Length: 427
Image (cartoon, rainbow, N blue to C red; front, top):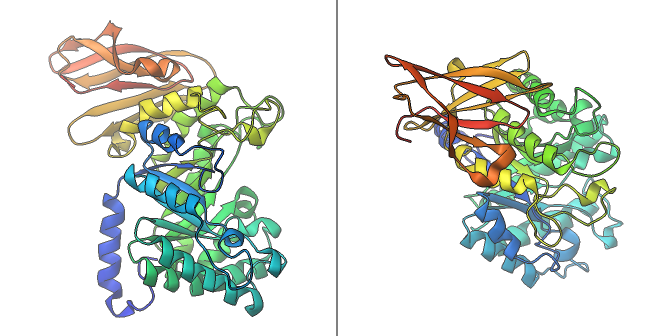
């Protein structure tokens, strides 16, 4: 979510070099999960709102049970084509999940020939019918949930990917094949490690993860503790695979509900900004799909109703406004570790797109007064985008650069809401 595909082993070295280059050059994916492919109560206008917020990929379910409501009666329902056409028109690279059971197979996972054969027929049919607009296919969703520590479950999953991936590549050679969609419990239970050890990257383009931490408890449910976990996983997976492993976070977010594991909507927005910029500091993370675009309901004390960027009536939550404000800085700006600081609860992350330089700064625990530095800012006003007031966009602040020759400094008040500060004159 392999650098090479089935039938290309004769070109393995060239393939590896070429794909490695492509992965390095690919823009970071700013994605979101939708439920509008199957739910006509969520209007496709929501995809336009996603596009306005800078979303570049949408993820949804191509349910096996919908595609095959009865044995050997395969279909593509009109809402799927409508969702795909809309996403494609908006240049939102679609991801389709190939998964879940069917009633006539007892909703069983395809672990035996009796279930696997019809599943692979469904994969063949769906990937032929949906065609080139689909840019990512995910083989099943959260397969590990029935046994995060069960080695037989992971072995059977790798066997399934080995058979499904060539079918997908034959029908959609432009699409990436992602394997895993592994839950937090599965990640902790070694499920991903077993997939890598069993060679899943010989068949898939990367590993997909659902690394939620909102219920991990104090000091372990923040974006900062989350990214430390991601860095540890990245090092571990790289060591296991003997190469960097592309990681696609196809579900990740914090819910804004009242009750256990919840935070308020303002903090959800702050966490979104911090998590997304922190993810850009880990090169193996190729993108995040925020779960999800629209709240699944309106009960304030129901966790599952409050993950969205939008409410059920498509009103913008603070997280949506922040997503819209920060998305231009996520795709093409590259992280500069040498110019960045992450220490003692202060984060000053430097990024550049080759023309413009920015620093994204915040503090955890308590507000701080700090300074930032830049070159040749000519005593101008400091231009800031404060995510606590994301709708204002980038504005001239009351602070000014104080320059001594080419070296300039400016004071900055840091809170838990990141500030994006321009470091380029005239930008």
